[in-house]
Image (cartoon, rainbow, N blue to C red):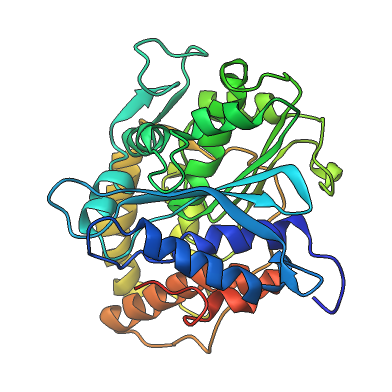
Length: 365
């Protein structure tokens, strides 16, 4: 960062990646170990350091959820507080646990069924706003998480205990956590009277690489709720909203559930890495038949659309040389490797926080 003050994006991407600490722990009650990993990591991540010392401390959590009978945690969330400004809080929500099969099935790919917004409600509010069953399950889980280490109850109970004065609460996450962070922030805004005694707290979100949460009605509702200010200190007011949705132009995840990106006329998902990785001839026919048509038929009726859809993308750079092979397995392997790099590595790289890619700092097991 060359000695300059960190941006909010740099701070929030740091917390978003800190949520992956301890994700591969398979022993019961991993919270204390995860907290130790986070505490050790913070002083090693430049945007979170002030005058050579850790500028943030964990004040709630980490709280985890593991599906009964599963080996690895499916969800994790914690709250950090700015040591120099006690009213500045970050709610960090973990993305997909790549080692947990049930997490993939229940919290990523359960998108064919849609549920009313808000979660747990029998009536949509506003009418027509729907989110994926995955997003609905995720949100209801994290709202019920309790901090066993601090004894501060659920997230809303903790925020209520802190909100005797106006708080600045920013919710962040990466990947599934990116999707979940914006829906959680929306829930906090809609239910602010239940936890904000001052009535003056600011709720914002800075998400990274988030898949689509819901349909057009949901996106319109969310955009309206975050439109305009008041803005937190240091916020990029040119966004004209308090929901900063950070997406890399070469990241597959933000595209995947929107049927506009896999339709016959707009196969953006398949052509994303052209000309470095290009499907053509028989290879294109096979991908079109088995991927484009399947996803179009599966998702077209749901009408998934991204929130803040017009926000400028981070300009991605292709990693490596690509391939000019005509072998479909080779093309698919190259595509998968590129997609993984863009989804995981591109954000710390583009935002200049390379410490987040150091496995000795973000310790996962």
